[in-house]
Length: 200
Image 1: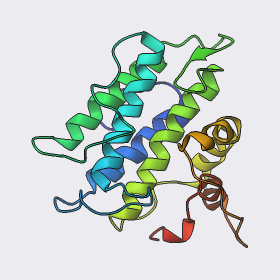
Image 2: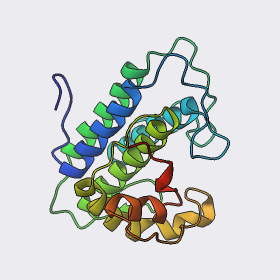
Image 3: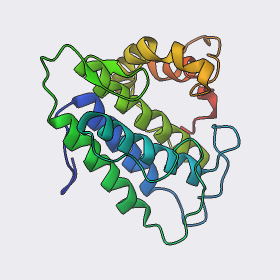
Image 4: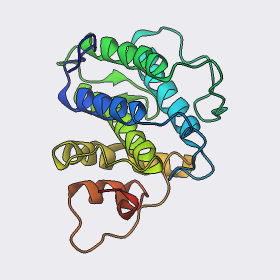
């Protein structure tokens, strides 16, 4: 972890947060308008959505206010925004919220599907950060921030939560497996993303 970074204490979530940080730091000044694997959304819109979702997970746990904008209708306007600071505030809120979770609790509140076990909830929060880290990295021509070690637990939680969310548009239809797919590719295809768009 970098200096000043708040740790949640949940390995999958912390690694996913770091993937998103890495992707956002690498966005060039003129890269925010670029198209992404998320249909009709630019890098700026995916970024805003990812920030809003992290705040949403924190709010579900703590009861504090959620994002001050609709993460599912991001404006893409980056005027006056300091991207690393905007992101770090959201990640810190999420990390602090998850750090306070009782690991022995039967379930904790999260955005839809609304209730998950502590591990699944923290991993679902991580899934959101990690997949959008990939979206941003691919859009800006950067290497994939996902590793097989991270993809495996993310796929586990994805299989737990994604199917009920597909009809709501949160995820597109899964893609057919490809020959020789590694754990990262399996995860991406399950989430409706083409791993061949990744830059190696």
